Length: 147
Image (cartoon, rainbow, N blue to C red):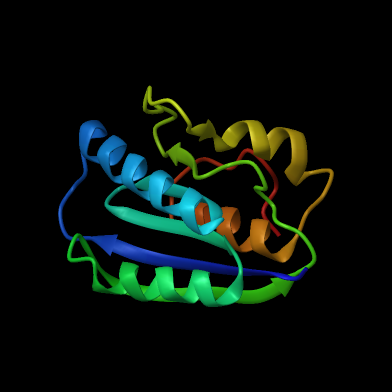
């Protein structure tokens, strides 16, 4: 079954501290699991970039909810596409702090594990859009060569 991927960027209305990020990710992870949505989020310097994936109507419905969230603004969709399989089939939400600090919360995976183990071996437009944008915006240091 085809999967749908959406990558977006947004600007936080206020700086998030670690506890606020853990709360945000915990709620997102719980909701995403009920909808069979997976993904990866990068946060740094007041900016978010996130890849969401799953059944198209569910991902689009989630994105509409995200658009209404008053914790951020200036949302821009970077990529929308259908793919044969998910990039994060077992991750409710991967997460990466730009400062290499990760929340100590059960159920979150460090996206750097994914970068090292999968990006170089199996690049895709979704991965490239997510991480190249994050590198260009200074949300994280390049751990792979941007295209």
